[in-house]
Amino acid sequence: METLETMRWVDGCLEILDQTLLPGKTQYIKCRQYTTVCEAIRRLSVRGAPAIGAAAAYGLALGAAALKPAGSEEFMAGVEQIARDLTATRPTAVNLQWAVDRMLGVLRDNITGGIEAAKEKLLAEAHAIYREDLESNRRMGQFGEKLIPHGAAILTHCNAGALATAGIGTALGVIRAAHQAGKNISVYADETRPLLQGARLTTWEMVQEQIPVTLLTDNMAGFLMARGKVDLVIVGADRIAANGDVANKIGTYGVAVLAKEHGLPFYVAAPMSTIDFNISGGHEIPIENRDEQEVTCFAGRRVAPEGVQVWNPAFDVTPARLVTAIITDRGVARPPYQESLAALAGK
Ligand SMILES: CSC[C@H]1O[C@H](OP(=O)(O)O)[C@H](O)[C@@H]1O
Image 1 (cartoon, rainbow, N blue to C red):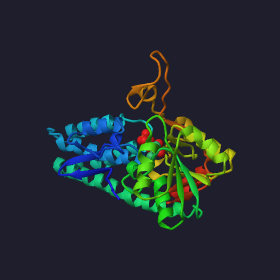
Image 2: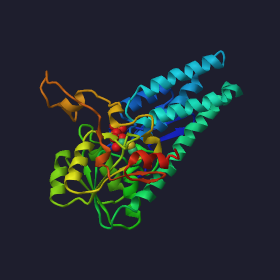
Image 3: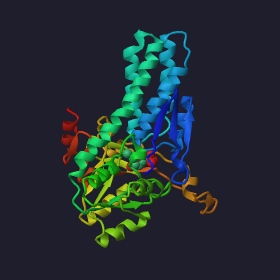
């Protein structure tokens, strides 16, 4: 089985697995400047909320290391600009802002110790963020697999796997844990238009691990459920509001409505770093709109006529009322989410 690292730190350089080339080609982007990390996030070479957060943390450490300020004030100003550039790359996954805020907090706590020491602290914190995600995924898998019945056929959307994280994944981490617990599960993977994270990445991860996986186009999910082929749905998340509304890859809301219609459990797996307690509901979640060519072209060939208008939101919002449970790295939250998520966060 080929196991690939989503990213790795090698001799002062962040190497990012270029996911736009998967599954056909395995190639790492060598990021020696933080601007290369910004571009990798923007073009989804690295993608998935936890992975974006970890990449941004390493990007901030890279950028800070290259600064040659006259003093600490200039250094702080330089790092804060790097932080702004990183958080501007993609607006929806809260892990990006969370990771950058955490790095800035470490800097402010250590600036009095001198600039070189602060640079070392930043790199250490980026390593910590990456390392913690490994353990966070493992815990989500442990909590989540208890919800998975033996022999379950599980539908998932997009890729919330090892390629979206530092570890075994969020939704796919639960699937891996259930598989390893001997539950004889199988997976249905939505291709996930327009960038095909399901067809390219989720199926690849499942095939690598010899977990039975069936690929379907997004518009087939309803009929598959109507034919009684699906036992439950599990997806990842990019930002979850305090009330349990979930922003995830475009198409997730439709799957949740279909699951409700067919009486199927709809689970969301996400670490606590994806819960945004600063917003009350999904209406406050910023939704990224992406380039129209992602929709008008397919495999590099234009399929829609010139002059067509395009709407290409990268995410949608699933209301909490459609979510059966939220599997986090601190336990499983059930409705009412305002209370259960706050309790898991120790608020
Ligand atoms: C474990 S977070 C995965 C999450 O991120 C994906 O979005 P993108 O591929 O655009 O970064 C998708 O929403 C996944 O559920």
